[in-house]
Image 1: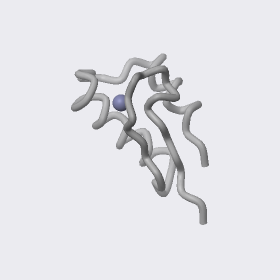
Image 2: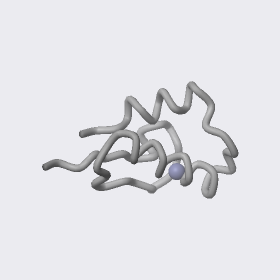
Image 3: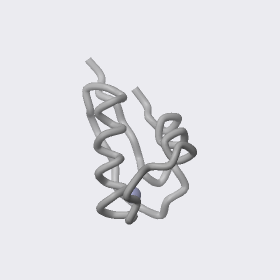
Length: 59
Ligand SMILES: [Zn+2]
């Protein structure tokens, strides 16, 4: 079974963070939310960013 992949730079960030094999899109969203908080100082992920993250997830 293929994992879900996500690269932060696919959302337009200059950032090398990536998720290589999450088990679901929801898991990627959770990991990305924590990453955004820690690395990008985003206390909450705005809907437009969530949309970008969602469309950058490859499964
Ligand atoms: Zn990042």
